[in-house]
Image (cartoon, rainbow, N blue to C red):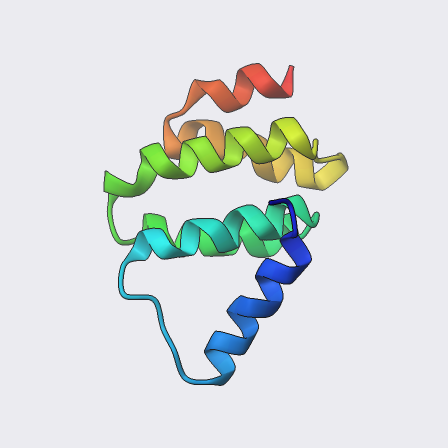
Length: 99
């Protein structure tokens, strides 16, 4: 519902209580919340951590990054950081949105 800061608060609270994700895809919402609150570096770090587990997550990550870039366009070095994901995730849709 667009409460990205609230989403990050809930993730922090869950960690504080000792909870962890059961599936890697549960972190997709956190990545989107980080990107939508302009915390591009942390969003990228979490994306990189998920990518290290295998390419099977690329499709969902592409959708998240495409939506985030479209709704909260990154600037400067954050834009460069995002542009690197086009090849890394193999999703040209991000490149189209960045144009």
